[in-house]
Length: 99
Image 1 (cartoon, rainbow, N blue to C red):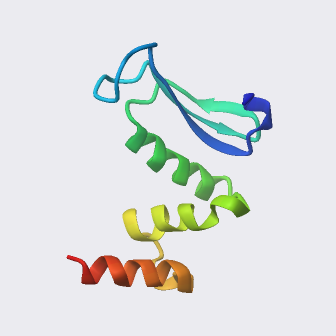
Image 2: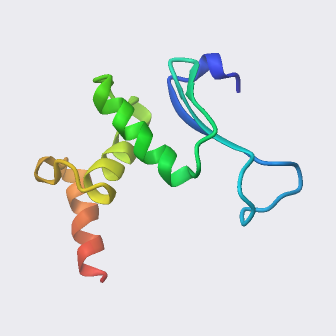
């Protein structure tokens, strides 16, 4: 898929034949088809920076991924936990009881 077609995305580039244990060659973020960050240290830092960019630029989550981003924001990053959608609240409850 071309970058121009992406609304909001993270990308990971690996050398051919390398496994998941090796560090990626590049990790970056694309917003509205434009590569806004690259050469990030890890996928985890890219997730945190992506959430920061969404907040700073006041962007809406893409509809197909809104619950995924809500889980990142409210469960993993623990931001605005008191405003969870019922679907995410249900997942959070199940995660709490499985510990």
